[in-house]
Image 1 (cartoon, rainbow, N blue to C red):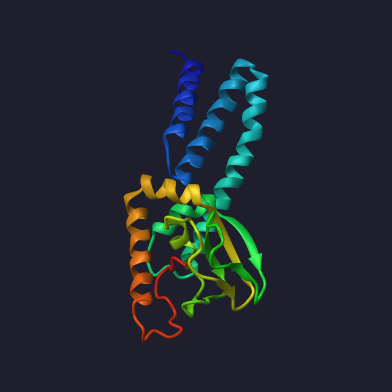
Image 2: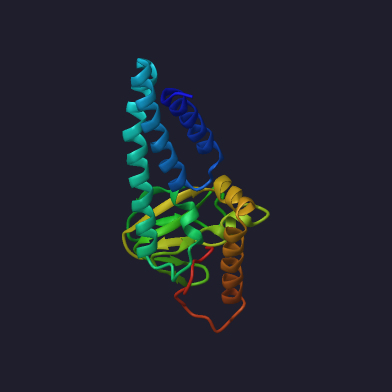
Length: 210
């Protein structure tokens, strides 16, 4: 078997692996490797369309890898207290900003997404709970039967949020036992706070379901 053939088969295996991998960083690393292999393969075989395609895909995959690593660093720096499960949501986050005093959502609104608080702080108005940065907001509404918000979330400062859709959260819940256990712990902690009549404006020590 020639080197040219080996490169062709290796590139095919790497492309197949990108469809199998579930973690975004590994997927991007394998995709980058496949781009490099196919660029060499195409140049040896004078396959210009394939070479152009992978030359274009290579910087895109490198950029996406850098983007995911940056988000993971921000999640770790925002105070997750050693809880690694939220990193699973990082590739699916979309950043949004809200101003001080603005409501992120109102009680009774349709719960179509979950928020991750990168910067700032938020008050869950009805229960008088303060949510600091590095925590999640809005999970209770996602898992409720009615799929409605169970509280009103108001910004105590200008905030930066990461948004992830309800469908993706539920998909991760069913696919990852660790993430499912993480959400259950969040809901259990919120239930404990709700059932304590002595609780006044607590600050959550772990991510809040909201």
